[in-house]
Each structure stands twice: as structure tokens, then as C-alpha cells.
Amino acid sequence: MKFENCYWCHEKDIAAICSDTWGVEVRPNETTEANQPWHWVVIPAMGLCMGEMFYLKELAEDCAKDNIYEFFFCGPPLIITGGTGSPINPQAIK
Image (cartoon, helix red, strand yellow):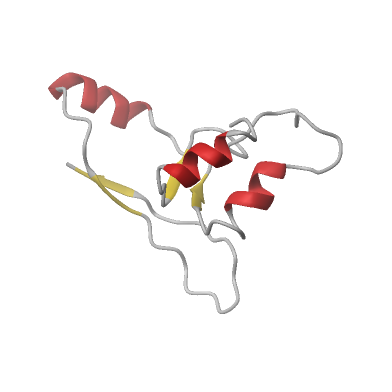
């Protein structure tokens, strides 16, 4: 994601975003002033939850097959006091 996308996420009240890429933002960074500046804004300032490196091929194929692109996503983190990130066991329930 480009840094300017922070504004769009805020305007649309996006609660979470997942991607099949590492970092969910433009690589290499568009600035040398900060490493992963998008993270610096969306996580602490907006409280946006992020999922990275998702394998989405099978979900995309299933959605294309029945033309249904809405589903319940569940990806609870491990319970780690004070933790800021965790591996999950994500599920998409259609």
C-alpha cells in the first residue's frame, strides 16, 4: 500500500486488512526517513489490524467458482500478555 492509502483506510473506517504480501505496503519504501511508514500510522494511530503473508489462492478460486465474495473471517491471535503480533490459524467461512 502506498502511504497515502492511510487516509482512505481512515475515511472508510477499515478495521482490518490482509494481504498475500510481506508488509502490506510498497517495497522498497517510498521514503528513506522511516522504515515501513504505513505501519507507523495505521497500527498505533488508527488501531488497524493487519494480516500478512496469507495464502489466498484457494479462497480466490472458490469465490470465483460460485461468484460469492463475502465470508466471515476469523483469525484469533495467541493470548500473549503485552504482545503486539501473533501467528494465527485463519478461517474464511462462507
